[in-house]
Length: 234
Image 1 (cartoon, rainbow, N blue to C red):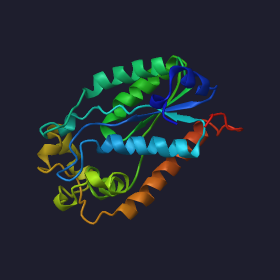
Image 2 (image 1 turned 180 degrees about the vertical axis):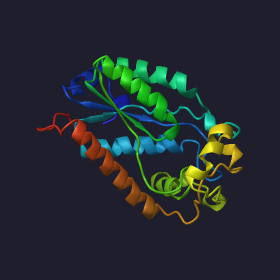
Image 3 (image 1 turned 90 degrees about the horizontal axis):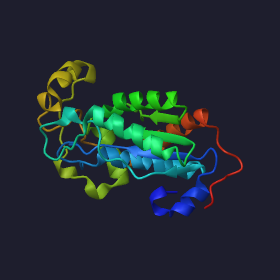
Image 4 (image 1 turned 30 degrees about the vertical axis):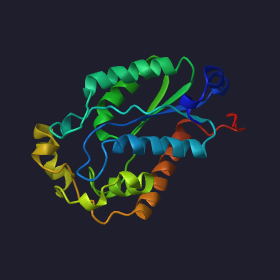
């Protein structure tokens, strides 16, 4: 299921026509005082693995753990490569990937990757490469709030510092967006949280994760109908 575990002959054997290579795109950025810097990457990887569990024509690539996270500057540990660099990385990565795989799926767990991913996707598709980008959508707090905390409690509970979970700026995103664009998250939330993570549970995270994987499955099913018979050798 995961390309990194294969040898090159095995990768070639599994790269049948129509096979999808799912590439998780994340970030290494602050997620409040209670969630790890890997949160976005962990969620993106979980979605790709979940999709591969439902579609036998999906292989999962190693995650890209760096993204465009300039809005989180000023918080220790945030590592951002910016929009221009991310766009170039995605273009070159997908050009290389399409030497082996017909279909490339980019699944981003970080909203800040949206613009560079869309630009890279547009360029790659003009080159006749079958590349698609997906961003999970869910209701709730924008960043490090209840939804992301619940997901991480379901995925990697040992990394959640539950005792440190505290509300940040709880205003609607539309209200704080102008401030975010000019001053970043630090300008509106000293602890880095946009929302209120208190009350998050692993059970809620499990339900949400299943919803997000189902949405990803349905989206890809419309792009690329499920292959029958199964063509991935288990």
